[in-house]
Length: 268
Image (cartoon, rainbow, N blue to C red; front, side, top):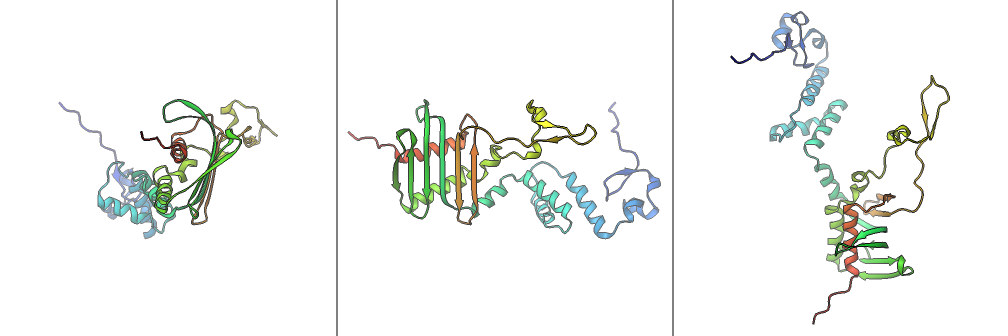
């Protein structure tokens, strides 16, 4: 014999989304699936509570067009709590929408990219990279400074289409505007906990008062890589890393820019 499914006890309220005892419902409320507590709410409060209840139980799967349309409408809801929750769920269901929208607004004006760490060359060997690349969209000039060669500079002037293609590649493919977030290069001070780091950089004024923690110190030594970008909309980006390795996308940018200065293969 198959086991009976366990059904929740009580009656369901469509406003708060809870199962409550029958005594919590009036005669009309029982038929309308609205408990006594929720019946005292205003029309706007009832609508907001129903929206929040639906959002909290929103399916994490491929949603239908009608569900997507409803979710986008709730992102502009008059209730801030509903709008914020709908926006968070929409970003979870469509994680690349926000990035793609940002890509359409960002055009690089100038870029400076420094690398001072070992990287893999095109043949799979490790080499010390100690170079700086600069890009100027207006003049279409790409410059490389080699600090291992006493700061010697090489410059190439790209065609208009080549420069536009390179800048689109950096924004649309490498998504340079998200590196700070993707590689956690700017952690919040609130997330800093010296206990987890086994450091002694904290003090207590009073055992009964809250623990006051010193903010994290700036990393010592020179950076392993740094990128500075100025966009056409006058926004600026400055990312600096002290890690002992070069992440995949910064490494891809380094190798791509280095190709412009490699000698062409001779044809025999």
